[in-house]
Image (cartoon, rainbow, N blue to C red; front, side, top):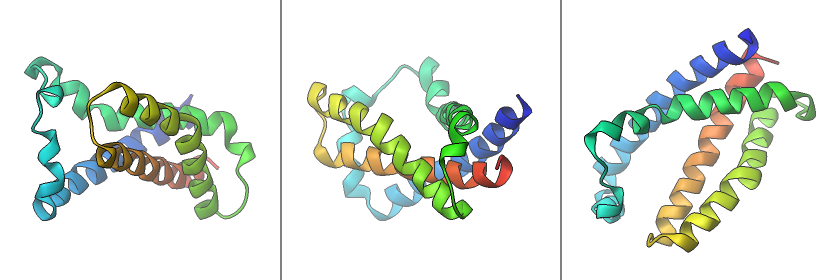
Length: 135
């Protein structure tokens, strides 16, 4: 259990910092790309905002469990292991979710592609951390 919880917690903190730092920089330097988020679809009641902020930890613990379960399938240098982990997650989980999201919701292709890339980067960063913390 320690092999899942500690790497998951560390990864959660790192992903939280990277996610919100990236969001801040993205809005600051590319404000036009974020105008599509001024949509009632993305406004939630304030009592649910905590779920949004916990995302980095939820994905980190899920990916930490996945890593611990399947790390034997990833070979090579830790960088290659992290990249392969990100690719596997992107193809197995992100692609189907983004496909159904784009087909069911009134959102732009750019949004879906940016979410896909964002999820891939998260998984690669988590994979790099896991390959060092839980080889």
